[in-house]
Image (cartoon, rainbow over all chains, first blue to last red; front, side, top):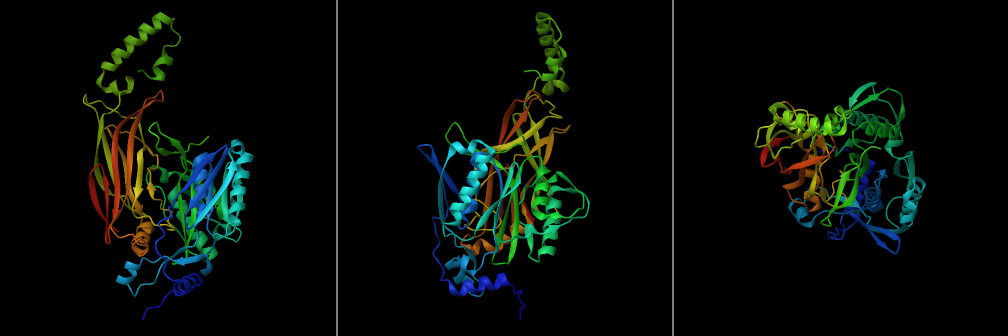
Length: 270
Length: 196
């Protein structure tokens, strides 16, 4: 007989599995957001289970901003069954899988305001405010990490609100993030695992931690600042396993090639 | 094209003498095989890859070294190469709502390396974190994405001159394919099978 690690999140996903009927795969969930322009107004539109996250990615890439994103702990009401019917038929004994139930979100803004730092901050606040009234899952707020770095975080706490400390000493960037994830897990009692991160020279930057306690969000921003290129993070909650994945990447800015293709190049430190 | 350092060396010369001296010196230095690539700021025309072993740590990834070359056998020791994208890649492991931040598209990081004395640079690691591979194996099929699935990026390598200009010299395809039990990492058609 198997002994399952039954926690609140797993229970929530089991409840969803029982309550929600399997939905057909939604081909409209594109995993990307687009920005279009009409008469001086721009509209960012996304269609994704996390539509705010995608909208923020599009804004970040369009204007070359450093904006991080954090999920709340989603409850059963925020989730839908996303199990592939053919897979379920082949694996009737395996648990179903869920996803966040968000879908479409769009908001318009004047691009004239984006030219100043205050205007960019106002734009992010407007997007979050509009999102919070959209009926999609989660309620969010903006945290200003420093004059050029923001985080979109839930109104409820996340593990990155915890005060943590690392053993003092120089770390490689990748080791520092892993140590931080472990420290957050120990303090918050919610498992935080590093999911995706850059490979290669970028991950080998040196981070000299002073060993002093600090809010995990601030410490993470400091670690990412030690990289050669600007990095951004996404802290995403996995309801099926009851843990967070901490993912971090090179921040990029969009440009259009001579052939008309939209390309992304890494941001550089100013 | 000569380097900024060369120009600075002769900046106090009277203009005509300076131009002449500059041109002659450059020509002489360009003829020295060991200095040819640096002084004349030539760039390679190609590179080849070879696998050197697993990246280790928290990754399921292979390290590749690359060797740059041109037809005259120049030495590019000390020169910097940088990767960018020559077109947008894809990630067929992606499904909407995943929690390891996979996107339908995939891109290189924009890393740089310094070329060594044997015209090699690296390692250029191709792969995923262990946690991401486990996540994909556990979750992608249940969300309707069968294995194997592949992430592929289109890497454009450029070499910079000391003056700041850079020339592209190699367009490489890099991929990592996740199977049920193994992962295959490829760079320029050189592929290695990895076990977790």
